[in-house]
Image (tube, rainbow, N blue to C red):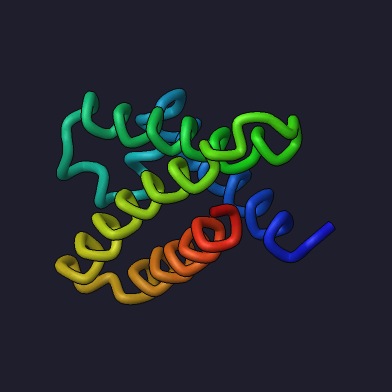
Length: 116
């Protein structure tokens, strides 16, 4: 197992968990992540579904050995979400969360470069 594969699995699990929480348990997610209260339920669900699709896109092609071109596309899409998250957390002066999102973005950047 390579380091790149480990990064893909870890980030895939993180985004799968976060996305599932935003879609399936939105009320609990809003209590834990107060920043979600600024957005409509439909938008939060859209972000959650996007995170789930991205998580599957960065992990399944590696495990199944098919459609490898989807991995950098999925990682790029998740990267766009992370850029928005960084901007939002900086605007709200939530610097630890912005740093965490930047770390995720860094991992996604390496997934894009490593799978192209």
